[in-house]
Length: 125
Image (cartoon, rainbow, N blue to C red):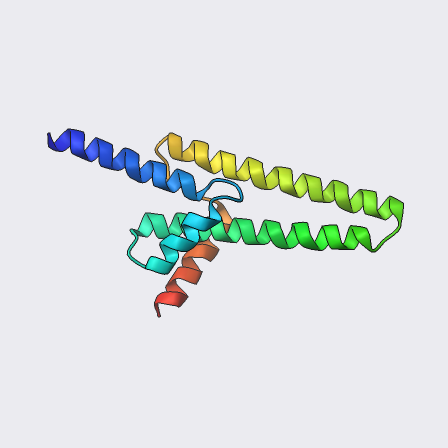
């Protein structure tokens, strides 16, 4: 009975982490988790990583879109093309992290995971 409970609990936690990493939509449960403050360490790390990803993508997306509206046609095309590449990269990274979770590994990106850990330590201090 204990084994069944631990397997279901592990699957539920894995699904919860998976939801945090959904592109664009994952920001809502991530913000909810971090605002409650009652989450496990792995949930907090995944939430912070998700927020850093979506914030960096949205800043790049908005700035490139705004810049494309303010420039000539050729430069606007290049900026919008770059915007599409960044958006595609964001979705691919999120999907890669989700597949990593399905394999049973924690979501990890070399630089961003360290940054999210530092941010977490500063908020606890």
